[in-house]
Each structure stands twice: as C-alpha cells, then as structure tokens.
Image (cartoon, rainbow, N blue to C red; front, side, top):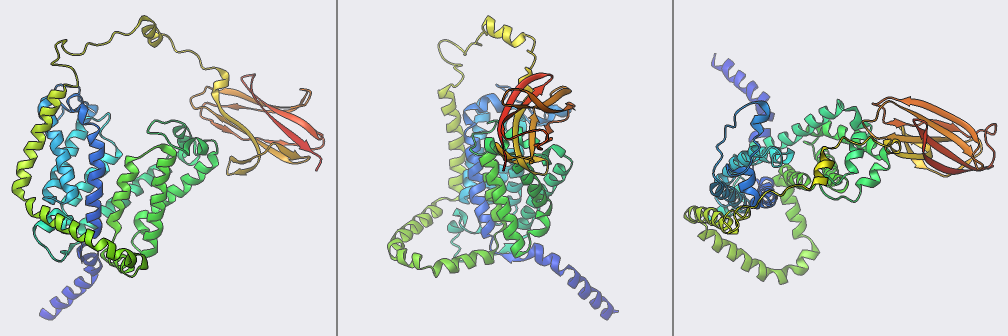
Length: 494
C-alpha cells in the first residue's frame, strides 16, 4: 500500500513539475523592479497634470462622472469635500513616487492601486481609460510581488548585501495578463471588418484627437499600408501569449510589440499607452538575461575605458543612496505623508483656482452671444456633394483592393485603376467615372451605385487602342451627377 502511494505521489510530482517550475521558480525580480520603477512614474506624470482640477473632477464640490451611473447603479464610492479630495489625490501621487523609489514598496503599491481605481471610477469621462485599467491590474500584481527586493530604498534600508530571490508567480501573472489582453484585442478585431480594410484607422489617423503625430496623414493617404498592418497586428496579438515563452518567440513578439506601440505614437498620437507597455514589457526580463547583460558590459572595452573616471562618482552616489536609505524609515514615511497631503490641500486653497474666495466672488458663467447661440441651435446644413468623397487617385498596381502605386503616365493598351474613397455616413449615392480626351470629349464611362455602407470603389479603366490614342486625357469623378474632381494623365505609344 505504501509503495503504491509513493508511486502515485511520484507520478503526480512529475506531472506537476512544469507547472511548479513555471510559477514557483526562484529568481531575483530584476524585471519586476524595472516595471516598479517606471510604471508609477508614468502614472505620476499623467495624474500630476490633473492635480489643478481635482476639486472639479473628483470631489463633491465639482461635477463627478462615476462609471457606475452609466449602468443604472448608485455610486458606491464616497465623494469627499474639495479640500479632502485634494489631500487624498496628493497622497496618491506620493504613493506612486514612493513605489517607484521602493520606499515601503508593498504598502505604496497597494495604496497606489486602490486610489488610482477610486479616482478613475469617479471620472469615467476623462480619467478612466484602457491604460488606467491595465495599469491598475499591473500595480495590483506588483504589490503582491517582491519587486522591492532590488534597486529600492527598502533594500538599502534593510542592508541587504545580496539580492533576495522569490517565486516568479507574480511576474508570470503579469506576463499572462499582457498576453491575454492582446488575445482579447485580437479576437475583437476579427469581428471588425473595417479594421482589416483599414478604413477604421484611416479616419482616426486624419485627426489629432489624442496628440500630434508625423505619420498619420501619410499612412491615411496610402490605405494599403493600413490594411497590411492590420493583418500583421491581428496575427501578432492572437499568437503573442502562445509564442512569447521561448527565447526566439520572446524576441520576435516583444520586438513586434515595441514596433506596434511606437507606431501608435507616430501615427495616432498615443503617448501614455505605449509608455505604459514599454514599462510593462520589462516583466519578461529573466534573471539570466540580466546576468548575461552584466557580463557583456563588464567585458566591454568602452566600459573599461571609462571605469576609472566613473568609479569615484559612482562610489559617492552609492554612499549617498545608502545614507538616504538609512534615513527613509517607516517613521519618516508616516511623517512625510500627512505633511505632503495637507500641505498640497493648503496650497490649493491659497491658489483658489476657481476664484471662490476673491473679493469679486466666484467666477460667473459667461453668457453666449446671440450669434453663437443661434449658430448652435440652427438646423444642420446639408453636406455638399464634393465633401462626400475622401480621395480620388489613379494608378496601376493594387495590394488587395487598395491602390498602391500612383502614376500619371501609361502605355497604350495598359490597364489603369481608379480608386475612390467615400466619406462614412453618406447616403446611397450614384458614382460615375468619365474618361475625357484633351478637348473634353467623352471617350468612355463607368458607373456604380454606392450604398451607404460602401466606402471604396476601385474600377479598372482599360486604355485599349480601340478607345484611346497617345495623348493627354482626364478622368472625371461625378457624384450624384455633379463633377467633383478630375485626374489628368498621359497615354504614350510605348
């Protein structure tokens, strides 16, 4: 009986060994320490710009917009008076900075998570977003980890000479969380046809809704790049969580991830969301990766050249950190926190951003002018026919159903493609292309009825010798019978 039990236990141990090694392997949390340093700093920068508006956005003195009322539920969170909301919000900023420094790391991360969740839910219009939702989850998992064991005030304060190892399960949960978020995003995109056609992204890139961006308008004018990028992005998101665990899979997936998020900055003007993911990607750093990097740095001739010059400076800086770590005790933490929170509340009271305590009283509401009021209340003007198309281009090469190569010179007998991109939310509209010679005489025409859901039409135009001769021609776009655009081109004998 004992032999059978031992055999069963041995089989169970062998079956669960990969699971135990995956979640409970002991490593120094270098990767999580980097996430802990940078992610709270990014959130600190985002929340700091909201500090002057705390009374307005997050307090009973202003106009909060809790997430819960959208679903017909009462707000479960209390709304504090303005001065107290400012103090609590400032305390959240303090906790984020303390978490980045690794000062009482677990406590700072736990309070950062709770307060970020609280304030985000009080302002569903502006504060809550994809990056605050994702960051809250990562902060929660960091608070369960031992990310303060290295590169932190806590490690210096406790005098640890060697970095302490811990189980990697919090790091694995962050990695799985990132991969599952990508998987869900990819599954959503599969059910969004306009994403793969590029039309969804094209009109977003034309705006500066988020921030300025250098590549958005260029890519919108070449929508085939958007369609190709959409397929690559979807494939990457769907496979990330399955391929990122191997060495080359991790290199490829993270490289594609950095490229993807960098392109959202260059083409869409997103800043905080990419920075948050750049910080979170460090959760995929292993202890072996860090030690490999350190060995390469130590053997670098460049470092050896500068080592003598930097050794004195590094020693002084290390002594400074050690001295500061000795003074940043829990007692100092408990003393600084109320001073910072109440001091910020007093400063906000003195600044009086809403002019509540001035001799003239609170700022009055400004009355709209009569012309402005009439403009806002007037009936919407009908959209002009020429405003119902976005682009009209001609070329000779397509990728998918998108024109990829634009030309103005064609050989006799060649096939030319015309591409018309219509603005969304147009009515069912009659679209016509008329081929004219240099004298304005009609050579040929083609037409279609574009229903309201149709945004793209790419008909071929045959330049056969039976229709055209070498010379100058023009292709005229007509919408609802009205000429709205013309593209000129040349036909050559060769």
